[in-house]
Image (cartoon, rainbow, N blue to C red):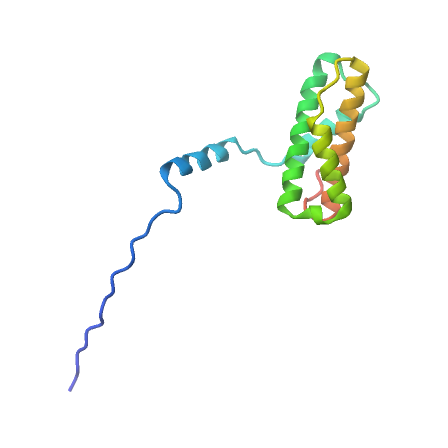
Length: 139
């Protein structure tokens, strides 16, 4: 005496993707633009900015832009790690945002001073993020 019972099969709800094709294309474009954090390049640029030998005038703008990019990346890392809850880190984030938005002065000596402020800010924020374990130390 065996009874055969059939399990009732319920239809599965239809699945809809979380993003449409336009949103996926946007995500893909951002992935293609993404560059990994390069601690070695960061330290090289900081060393150039803070070195006793002043960079040649024609290179100052490029170095400043690279330092601004490092600041932007470090601030993104700090915010993503919620590091701004630490007072010292929050102060450095604000300083980074401020110095990053300043224009490079036209006077060569003032431009070098600005370059050094950028370099110090990059260095300080990177060290603070390493100290708070938001970032491994750059090698």
